[in-house]
Amino acid sequence: MAHSHSHDHNHTGKTISRLWFTFFLNLGISIAQLIGGFLSNSMALISDAVHNLSDTGSIGVSLIARKYANKRADKQMTFGYRRADIIGAFINLIILIAVSLFLVKEGIERFLQPEEIDGSIMFWVALIGLTGNVLSVFILHSDSKKSLNIKSAYVHLFWDAAASLAVIVGGVLILFYDLYIIDPILTVGIALYLLYTTYNMLRETVSILMEATPQDVHIDSIKNELESISYVRDVHHIHVWKIDEYQKMLECHVHIDKSHSNLLEEIKSDIKACLSDRFDITHSAIEFELKPCESSTHHS
Image (cartoon, rainbow, N blue to C red):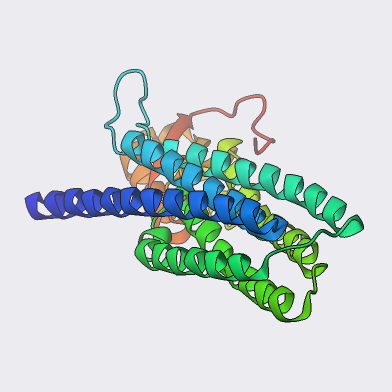
């Protein structure tokens, strides 16, 4: 057990170190792209800079959330602080959506009134952005599989790398062909694609915060499985939710005959084993009834 705890602690320390490195790297990229965007008059480069700046903010939120997520449960926060990760992810995604909508507006205005752009500055600064984003994506790749919050920051960086690549192509077209209209097209295209990619993650995050039934859980299936256990007559008031992206919670009422009350611990053990094996629910609160309550016909 001591070895496992040490391993988790070391892994958390490495995660935070990688987040800090990525934070300062993206802050530097954002500043460089903003300066380059204003010098070249490229809205696409400025949009890439703003996205990078939102990445920097999202990583900062991830660092704060990671700090609180690892705090132990106490009398005020009896479930611990694990949902801090989800709140961090929610903030990240809302910021990204707001920035993307703003850039759609700016891109449309620039499309209607194209302006001259310095393709050379646009190209080289975008290349710097691409290099930094690819490095950041590489650094956070493994951690993104373990946390929805870090995954949201990772997705920011991944698509911003793709955006930087598009801006590089745009810079080449402007540099050699004076195709200025490509700048607002890239701006709107990048923003719309980011809106599309954040939708599912935002939906999952809101679902957890609203304590909705997880998508892979069906209340009727749980009811049928539990009622097939020996001595269980009826199961109702079933509630299933997630405390974070991993841990599922359940509470329910279970009706058994009074004559079987001496088997209560055995029945409870069978129920918990069924929930764990069949539905991956390892934390449950079960209320036993020796006579059905008035609302036993309802599931929730």
